[in-house]
Image (cartoon, rainbow, N blue to C red; front, side, top):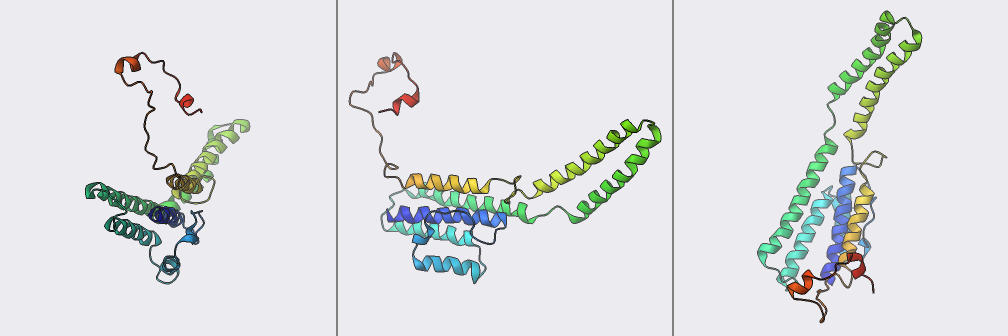
Length: 227
């Protein structure tokens, strides 16, 4: 139980710290599961990683989780064959690689010369379009919408692209990072439930013969959960 309680808190904190990193948040803005229950030495080290040494907090937490798993395997808490346990380390490593790919999106801005050239061309387009339209259209009632729609559309597309350039943030058009953290916490809390390790079985009077099962009247799965 001590292992599971510690692992859940470290995993929740690591996931929240990863979201902080890709969103550019300067503080721990995402809710975690009872992090203050970790021992004082761990909390102090995590604080120093960020405030004193400027180390990657996610990397430090990932290493802590690996050390925790290895230690509990050595003392016999975990009874897992090494080939299966290696998948845990591979999954942690793959998650960190995916985080680095997300950080690339955050840190790599759209090339500044291209952005300036696009804005310059939009200005030129907004100046020359009215001149060209009025040169061959005699009706001002039609000239106004014919001029406004393409100019407005070009500027609108440019603004949409600017919004999509940075999807990790707190704006309305960004990814729901807080929802991701909440879903992760709910998944971790499920592991802490007393029935999470329940070994399922069938009732003594259950039908086991294939002919009986073939002729059995099927019912919705939701009915099976009712008392």
